[in-house]
Amino acid sequence: MTDSEPQEPGKAGRDFRDAAARHSARPARSLVLCGARLADGRTVDVRLVGERIEAVGTAGSLGTGQDSATRIDLSGYLLLPAPAEPHAHYDTALTAEPPGRPDLGRGGDSRHGDSRHGDTADPAAEDVQRRTTEAALLQLSQGATALRTHVHVGDVAGLRSLSAVLQARRALRGLVDLSAVAVPRLLTGAAGAEGLSILRDAVKMGAAAVGGCPDLDPDPGGYVEAVLEVAAEHGCPVDLHTDGSDPARLARLAAAVGGLRPGVTIGPCGGLARLPHQVAQRAAGQLAAAGVTVVCLPQGNCGVLERPTPTVPSRTAPVRVLTAAGVAVAAGSGALRDAANQVGRGDPLEAAYLLASHGEARPYSAYEAISMRARAAMGLPEVRVEAGFPAELLAVRGNELAGALSLAYSRIVVHRGRVVARTSAVREYCDLVGVRELGLPRQSQG
Image 1 (cartoon, rainbow, N blue to C red):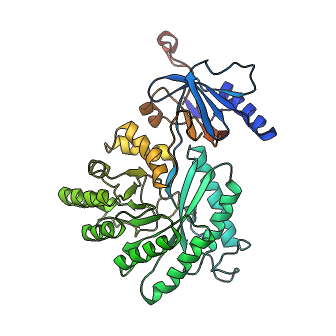
Image 2: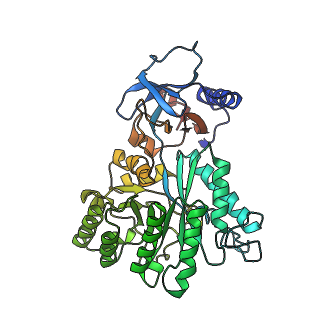
Image 3: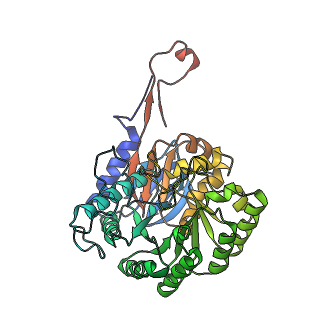
């Protein structure tokens, strides 16, 4: 019995190649996704024009094969709003290498160019750019068409890693939308003065949001105030790391950020799961009242926070408690094969699967955490499979959402109305006694 990547992708694969060739030859006039199944059970055709969904109709209703639209057969696929990745760490992604290999992604050294403002001619910056591009393409292939990565600024590396990430963003334009959150280590006291200056420079350079980890600063409250000051100056959102294990600190944070626009996101808040239930409920109520969004990391923690000790294991935020209190909860991937999680996959559908399998959310709500609520946390417009909405879509093989989350191997990704990635998996089985009598297939797609 074998389980392998296919050599022959079949009709959907030929449709994909034809669509890609036509898109590369001329600007797309329209694209029709034929025979797709929606989460509500309907089978439909979906016409995309430009970057938006123009029409959704019953299967076979949107024109014929004689019109000028490119057509892709999605029979056997479930069509969903595309996921988004609200919490990645691409500047450290893919650095879990065997001992002895130099790690160029940990800030490099100051002998290479201007460490404050970045110089992508040096090896450290080139390595960050390469790994950022590889990680972004991996997550795109898994369905995420919008990505937010947290990037360390300050210390020895200055703005080098941010510059490299922004270079990767420019190279990826048209395939996937990538934005960066500037993450300084210290912002208070004499040691924090340079960090505050670099944070302001990071926003001017192109960071879309300001963040960091108040838990690691000697003055967590002062750190939050400094971040909010920079955010107010530039009108940008705030995205902070916190374990959430100190309810008094969470209460002060909620009081400081309440009503701030653009909004405030915090995560991964795994420490909330270690608090007594009533204490966690009270903290969740305070976050809800302040309009704070929580991004949980079901696949593991991230390297910005101090790594858990054996007596204090990493936990996922208590999603049911937060949701019951009215907190908007999104889900991200966190570490992608770095020191914090050497086996991190970065797969948003796995994040949804884990929320559902651990009983934190039902399958539909778990999927919303990686799609609708993840996009909202990033300040992006809502996506529905309805006319007028952005053409940001994921087709995954399956007939219903629970099954798709369980066995989500074959995927087709649409970004801005264009097919940008395809992954296919085919299983083949050897001869087994009784297969013919039972009517079981020798080959299946997942």
